[in-house]
Amino acid sequence: MTKILGICGSAAPKSSTKKLIETALDAAKAAGADVEFIDAAKMDIHGCKGCLVCKKDQAKFCVQKDDMTPLYEKINAADAVIIGSPIYFGENTGQIKCFVDRMYAFLGPNGSKMTAGKKAAAVITQGVPDVATYTGCAEILTAGFRYCGAAIEKPLIVGDLHSADDLKPEALAAAKELGAKLAA
Image (cartoon, rainbow, N blue to C red; front, side, top):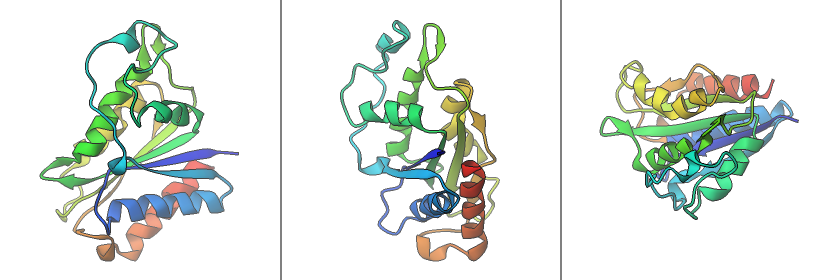
């Protein structure tokens, strides 16, 4: 059975990012996948300290003991990961940036510590109507996965949003399509 994680970096109560990730996960579950939603914005994930311990031992991830610790195992056990963030002041949220920085621990002295064959996709929501404005933010979310050999799916970027109430049917349909594709 395909295992898919959805990791959300939005703390907004009516988060469009969360709604899109949950919609993708629901479609993946309907296609037979085992899914899990992770609310990274509510977790205690510290930034990388640059100690390089993860670079000295292929079997170790990070010396910090916070809410990121169990996520290394969950990411390795997953076949696919959807990672999402709204754009705040031209950038991914601070909560998801700490998660992305800590992905650095997947690169060890002998290469990637990430299980092979993984897929990753980004979900970006933004207030700006032009979806091309923040494509770089989507690339940042999946860069760590790419460095570790994961196949990167086309990002889902939706503009002109300020809450989940602003989501249009075509955006929800695109999220369903993403979930089904990752489950296949």
